[in-house]
Length: 248
Length: 274
Image 1 (cartoon, each protein chain N blue to C red):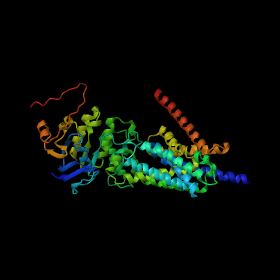
Image 2 (image 1 turned 135 degrees about the horizontal axis):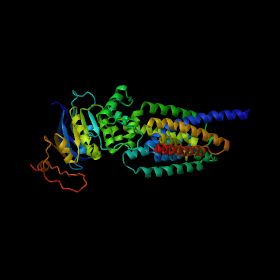
Image 3 (image 1 turned 45 degrees about the horizontal axis):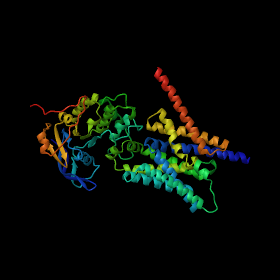
Image 4 (image 1 turned 120 degrees about the horizontal axis):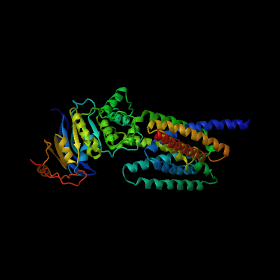
């Protein structure tokens, strides 16, 4: 297995307050890692470090440069980023995924536009190329954002709480899409929804100041306790319900 | 004979003024309206009046004074809100009134000279000089070049700043440059529409355009067209009736906006029936 990303004894802090300590973590090709942990435990900070939005206080974050053709990272943020009234079309948003490495005088070539059309077809958004964001449903918007994340054929796809704006009609479809994409790219998915996460991932990482990697998708209470990973389970349903431990 | 030369000069000035005002206001206005910076722009406009007053008092060009005040206040508000050090709307409100107060104080302190305040507040055809037109023309070229070269970069930063930061190190640089250019656009258009009314010169045309399209580039083009019709018509009415030109331009534009809304309502009604 070839590695894509390595974090070596990374410490990170916000305004002098330490958030993450001594993170050692390696992502390999075809990984599908679920990142869980309590709020304020550092999940978002981990993403910011990988995206280069935050510089580590110490330690190093290295990408395997031998592998890179196309972009390194595709990023699907929570829906709250982006102005949902902005006069921008579906196709233009998807094209913005190609801005990495283009520089400020960016022009989109015919090849770029063909790539966008291909992604639009792949995600079932045909006929919506010229629609503006205010005309889209939550599920369609998420597909557009996914399109923006994958148009550059990244080696690593980062998903930040994708469950937040999946509409239920698209939810199964969405995770199927991720499964297909996982053949071509490693996926790192941050989620508080442990139920959804464990059905789709191959392994998980628990982030709470430090990072514990667990090479299986089975998450047990014992694991969570051992890692000091007090997560809260949140699900939505018509009837208030309690989740019981799985039968063996 | 003298009369007709004066008229000819006026018509040329009017047409050039309308062309440059609509280009600059259309480009800057679409950005301002899309990014919901209308209130910020209003603050910049009124803050720049302080510069006009200082210009008179110090005997320098009032437009230069206004430009300095406008850009400084724009960058100040942008910087402080990026650093989350202030409540942006409150800061704008304070700056808005402070700029006007400073302007009035300086103008009244200027010895032996009472400038045409009405002209600065509501616009005046007579105050538009060749130098003003040259400045507005240059500004048109600068804005076309800027938005033309960096169209996608500017569009994507405005739409989703956080995502833009993942691929560009120049997000803040572009925000500062764009805001400065908008401040400059506003200041140069004060000669046309006046301090009180110039903000509508930027905001009404994009709102007319957005009735018909939601695509950024088309909004820009349609804004420039709507802006030209409104400005040229307003100019003509102001000349014939001897009313401050800012007022006639804004009224013309609002009537256009209502008319466009009406056409759209009727069109929707028909679409619904079919």
